[in-house]
Image (tube, rainbow, N blue to C red):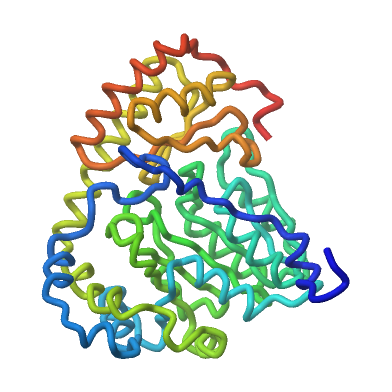
Length: 366
């Protein structure tokens, strides 16, 4: 690099996230999206939209009031964000300085680490055990006076594992100097929420997304819920127009259609159970999931399986590079019709690559 303009060293040395979005044609079971689509009410709202939605700066407050009613929270405890990614970014920018520590249980969502590193903070990780279960005791032991941010996905991605409520609250109590984020992106599909503790626990934040169960990933809409006094600090960092007007206009329709959400979630849970049964019947190692996906071990056949499924028009996610996930592939569940197609194509794909189930080697378990 030239001797002229340079990025901060923390930025030059941080990891990059490259989502494999190019050429995602076919059945997309690789990104944990709602692949059935959004509520019909959202589409009706879009069709009725006028040019005034586009030519005015978006006003976030009305959407936050609607979200607050939905979550049973005061409006000042809700901050709408440009996806949960921005919520993570705002937490890192608000609470981390160079020399501080962010604490993560891995494997988990990679953006926690990336946004923390961008501030110049140090990221410390606690590896999940052989069963990729939530390492509650390890996290508690890893907390130091320098810990200023702890991010926990619950249910976790890519494992589908969940933490118990009391484990999460114990971690928050053990690190009162740290912002503790419980990312509940997949809470519709399993696990127990700690949303009712927001405001009672002074350092606890909960994030929710509209990209999974609601089918609004293209809108980039999330919600960060936390103590009002702390959210006042985050609002100083956030752009006043961070959420676009189209997303805000459609939010109420998405929130009001509970029947659609319940119906879609029921289909996902049925498909998840069928996929897990498929793995059990064939002695394929997998991790019981509380999310809208299942992680399984295919070992040396991993790359061939991903390629063969793509050839058949179904995208699945290679998670080989995640800590403790060597040889693993994650598959998202969608509606009943999509699950039928997956369970029809998957055994044929495995047969075509000559797959033979194998035990997960001990060296790949941590």
